[in-house]
Image 1 (cartoon, rainbow, N blue to C red):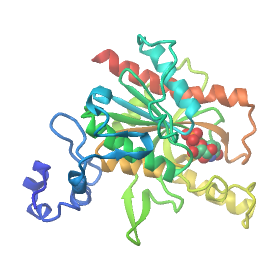
Image 2: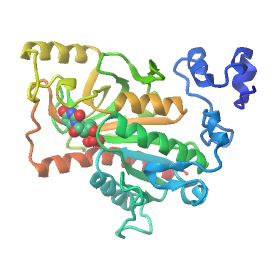
Image 3: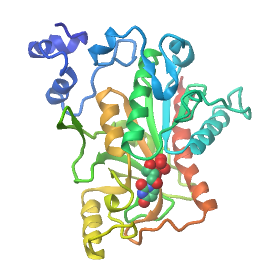
Length: 334
Ligand SMILES: O=P(O)(O)O[C@@H]1C[C@H](O)[C@@H](CO)O1
Ligand SMILES: O=c1cc[nH]c(=O)[nH]1
C-alpha cells in the first residue's frame, strides 16, 4: 500500500508499509513538526477509510459532501475560530464583520449548522466562527468535523483558534492568556484517549510562531495584560480543576494549593477544559492553531466565579480583540 503523502514515503521506506500509522510515524520521526499538507495548502486527511465513502455526512454540522458544495461555501476560509458558547461565537462573527469592514456588517447572521441544532456556526468573509460547547468530547466532535469540512472545502492553510474563558494562575482576573502548550489533568503534555480498548496519547503541542505572533497583538494601550503560558485542559470543572466548591471533595485546601503551585512551576498560566485535545488534534491534522482565553478569576485566590455578568461579558471580548487584530493584520497583508 502506498502512502499518498509523497515526501514522507520518499524519506523513509518503512513508512510505506504503515499507511495507517503514517501520522504517528511522522510525529515520531519529526517531533514537533506538523504533518505535511497538500501542495496547494489544503488539509490532507490521513484516514484512508474516507476514500470508501460515497458521501461523508458531517452529522453535527448538518452538512454533507453530496448536498452541499463545500468548496463553494467554505473554500475561502482562512480562520476557524471556536469557543464554548453560541452567543460568544455569534458576537465574534459580528465583531469581525466590523473589524474587516465586510459588506454584511450589521446584518443578521445565519447559523449554518441550524439543521443539526447542536452547535452554531457563522461565516463572515474568511472567518468561520463556531461554538463547541463545554469540555473535550463536545469540542473534539466539532473539531474533527471542522477539520474534515476545511479539507473537503479545499481551504488553504487555515489557522484554527480557540477563543475561550478560563481560570488563571497568579495573574489578575480579566487577563488574556495565549497558550504555549496544552497539559492534561495528569500534568502531562498530551491528550489521552482510549481507542479500541487501549489508551492512546498525542502530544499537545501548539504552533510557537502563531503563539508569539498572537501575543504580539497585545498593545500597551490595552486595559488588560496578555500573557503566554501553558494551559491545562481539565476533564472536569470542579475536582478536575482542584476546586473546593463542587458537590464532592475529599482533599484539603493545602492539597489544592500544592497542586496549583505545581502547575504554576510547570509554566501553566491557566486552566480550562479543551486545551490538550485542541492542541493535539490540530497538530495531528497539520493545522496551525492557537488558544486565547480570558481569565475569570485567579485560582490562587479562590474557586468561585464572582465578577458580575456585565463584567464577564466585557472580559469575554478581550480574546476577540487580540484574535481580531491578528486576523485583520493577516488580511491587510494579502
Ligand atoms: O470557551 P469556554 O468559555 O466554554 O471555555 C471554558 C472551558 C469550559 O468549556 C467552560 C467551563 O465553564 O469554559
Ligand atoms: O475556572 C474556570 C473558569 C472558566 N472555565 C474553566 O474551565 N475554569
